[in-house]
Length: 113
Length: 113
Image (tube, rainbow over all chains, first blue to last red; front, side, top):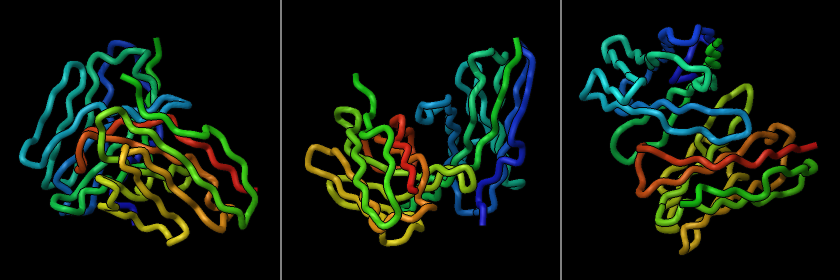
């Protein structure tokens, strides 16, 4: 049972345009969400997070939107740069003592010059 | 500040053997989590240690175990290896327990033949 789903295995965008990566979840107990990116041969790197009390969090070129009623979150990258090409993972956590992270399977983003 | 280090980086073992992987967290980080990454299942949480105590555990069989030492370094052990244990094993550290920003190491690639 996959509780965090990234339905697009890959996404290709032009440099300078917006990249939108999507993530859906099924567990209504999730209340904290994170995005990580991963380059080949490296571990994932934290990008941005959002708590369920917010619907938007912004950090430079990266913005995460959370729609709790739809159990959906998205990561916007504006403008996209070739160095953003990587696999992006969405992760979610329940509150309280059961805070282990549940990851989606990732979306490979390719930003073309 | 040095990042999370994992040793060894690559390992080949035979079915039925056991293996021990090591993780050194970022200096000052007291929480260490372990993940298994496979093409089919993605990133899956194994367990988390803080102050030498296991705080959270994922849905893995008892063949997977871990421990943390007083200097926060952690080891994970897999006994009676199976072919399906072939994976990238990632360690992540953070200052304190919780779902918040974690810093990942490059991983140990385990191949079971």
